Image (cartoon, rainbow, N blue to C red; front, side, top):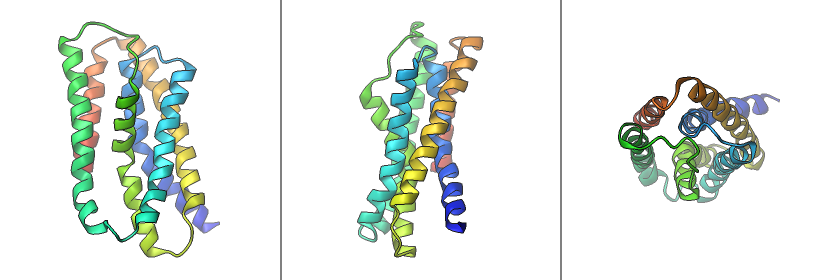
Length: 180
């Protein structure tokens, strides 16, 4: 049972980036339907579950070189997305119903789950146990927090209007800086 609580704590920590980005997405597009919110959450949860598995299978192979670059990759992806949001909040037209593209969703999912890949690397080196159960828990927790984040962002965005898109961009850049 001790292992379960450790995995749950890891899942909570790993889901914080996806939660924050989900808030930003809810702020940006305040009209996400349950279907769209579910799709976003499935992407975030799915990537968050897949990355530790990928890290587990790759193991030591790229540990040193990937670990030194992963922070930069996440930072660049989040910074670019955040800067685009800030730019659109200043110079873009008001488009509350703007759809999130699949390519943007993939980029955000990768950016928020790179730390889970590193967890998979670490777990492969530290334990001979399988990581599959932990990956399922990580994915489920991230799915829940992504749904919650979208709802919070949507509610706040509907109350405060377009200017919160800039705040969402700042959140993404802040997450990138934290990772860096």
